[in-house]
Image (tube, rainbow, N blue to C red; front, side, top):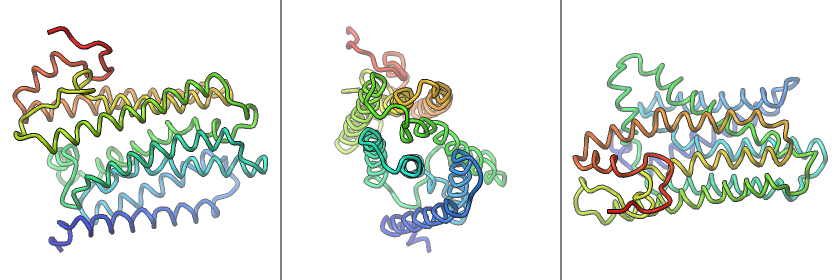
Length: 299
């Protein structure tokens, strides 16, 4: 069995089967659940799919089996709201398809990024390994609530803006807020793509694993990819405002993303790099953690 776990092909196959069956379960629940608010219906479906992924992550003792869920889930959350729009008005305006196209572009790019550099079932995120070693027999609780359910809820909150932007009945025309959303979300996707591409080229060409990526966007921010990720969720929020100003409360989603990345993701990554690379401390001192510096620092 260990030989299978080392195989990337086996890993791809397993991940595909697990996520396809999760989709089948979600599709069945979509028709089975009735008589409650669409938002609560969607949350139940979302949690059920997460629990299915969690089950298999326990079977194969690899919490990273959940990693693709972050980018895949919004694709289907968006389809749910497009279907709601179709049921309400019997049509889906072009504006909604454009917004969904932005969401799909983000999801496909991020998912491709995962699959292109997937290392198989023997790989597990360093943060998950830390928690596994720290919590021992209680890791299943951390895995369930901290690694899987919490991010699912956070993505769900970030996607609440879709309940307005993709079921727009009040404003089928493109508004100023929509234009802001296009610029912010589209720019965020481009920034993430450039940052990831620069990092992958650096990793491929480096001659020493202790080398630090401090060129391109990474010379302006230690985590430009994280900045782009958070910016994308703010873009979705502006799309919601473009549909209905009463959607202001969906700001809880992007705020939650800011809190996640500033209080956990960035500190955890910085701490990890500090333990591996001596020069990283100097890099931290001269490079902003999150928001990219607009102008290069004078030497």
